[in-house]
Amino acid sequence: MGTVKEIEQAISRLSLEDMRLVRDWLENQLEDRLEMTDEFKGRINSSEREKADGQRPRTR
Image 1 (cartoon, helix red, strand yellow):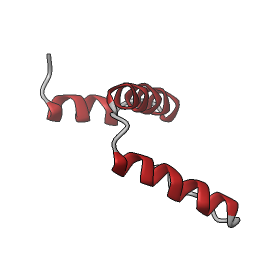
Image 2 (cartoon, rainbow, N blue to C red):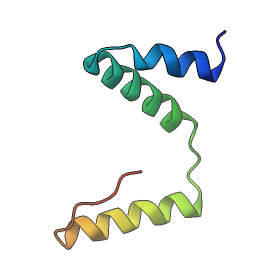
Image 3 (cartoon, rainbow, N blue to C red):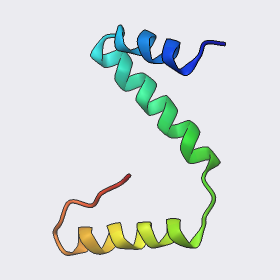
Image 4 (cartoon, rainbow, N blue to C red):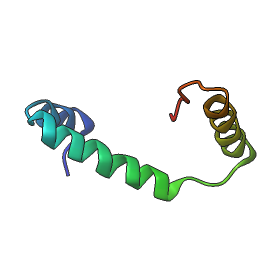
């Protein structure tokens, strides 16, 4: 397996569409490993309040 640096270099050579596909895949991988901690629940609640107030919620 390549190092992070090698992976970064390979990703930088991808088309924009392929980068988006990699991003989506990586986000799904990270989401699958998240735990429903109190901090995470708080972030969800904060985003829901922002959305209800007409703001654009931050999802990261």
